[in-house]
Image 1 (tube, rainbow over the protein chains, first blue to last red):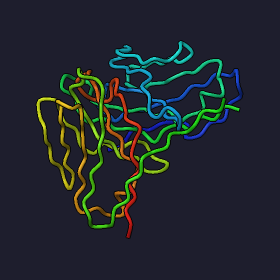
Image 2 (cartoon, chains in turn green, red):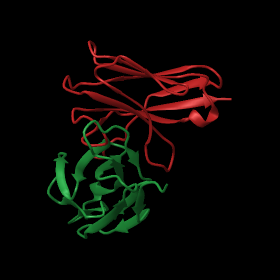
Image 3 (cartoon, rainbow over the protein chains, first blue to last red):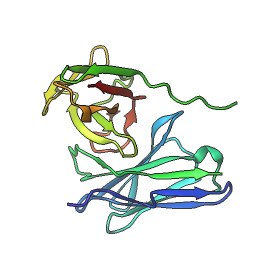
Length: 114
Length: 114
């Protein structure tokens, strides 16, 4: 079965622009979580969506937002890009139910802000 | 000033030897712990998980040990192979499972020497 798919794989944007990243979870998975990975801060949790609702949120500014569609696909948006937003953005999917365990990560979108 | 990238601890072992990677966590409320492996250019890959009501769990060539008293987690890899070379992350959660709200450690770079 297909894994978690993130598009695009690479992106270059200019400061001040906005960007939308996409994540298609594994079929049947209803939970999608987003993470930012940088050399300085490591992996940090952005937010988690389940059944089109944001269930949990990390400590990121409001410029970072997301949504989930009825088919569980998710998008995250970053507005007014800053140089420090350059990172690998990862999404992970899981079943999302009570006692849920194993989560699967996509290969990530490498965002470079110039 | 310029941010400094993470200096990952490195563990170098001979092929065929056993390796132990350690991790300290901070949240006493964490009830779910996971080890991930990340190879260059890829997203984190689930290795093994353990819940707080257990102190040991075994998988194929891997064992995770949890010591809640000192908030310590370890990953043992038996008979290491070249394909085990990667960065290993521990992660903790008080959300019960999946990839929701995981707090990741800084990572350990495991190098398998031929």
